[in-house]
Image (tube, rainbow, N blue to C red):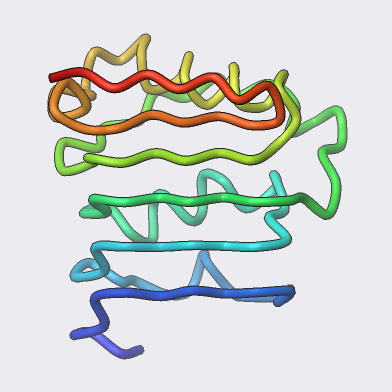
Length: 121
């Protein structure tokens, strides 16, 4: 499915079969109306992302409120999350615990609703 796609922005879409698609060349992904149940399937479908922006949410049910699997995203440069603070914290923990987030030193982290911004130079 669209193997050469580099940038994708989805607004208000649901039912994307993340487990069935592979977007290895996708570099930038923005999702408005993010569903926490899709976090790992999205990361698995798009392993080479440099930029991730997740905004809003449809729901965060208890079974998806804790992310326990570590994530390797060596190309990630920008991570922007406009989600509940507790879920933002879970995302950072699954990235941070793995120590597989080397490029963020030169990138940008931003979180909402508390408008915390960290940028390393």
